[in-house]
Image (cartoon, rainbow, N blue to C red; front, side, top):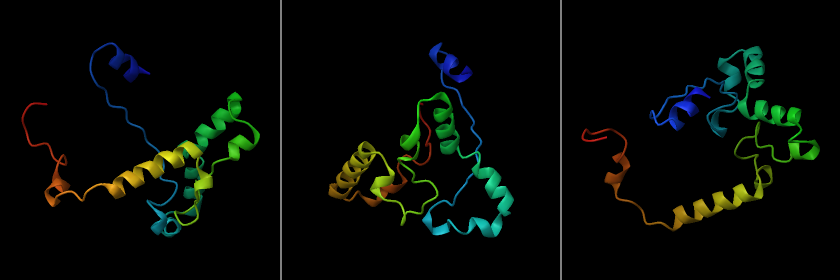
Length: 125
């Protein structure tokens, strides 16, 4: 809340640090490997703090999410190979499909563009 008030007052940007637990692997390639380098109890406890699940539970408590709606879109706990379009709201699937189609239709960029906007090279901010 302080960062919002700071920004709205015209005092400029603020940094908000949010610490969370990486409940699952970085991608479907390492979903099962987490069990090899973290104790199972740590993983179970950490997953209780999963921001998506915490938010879902809060919405249920507030009565904003009920019954089947709370379970309608459940991509969590699934690898990329297991998840399907049914795990996401239709408007999200449509938006992602549009983005993918646009990217696939776009011209291949010049190789030099790969390093563009990666590092600050001086000058005015």
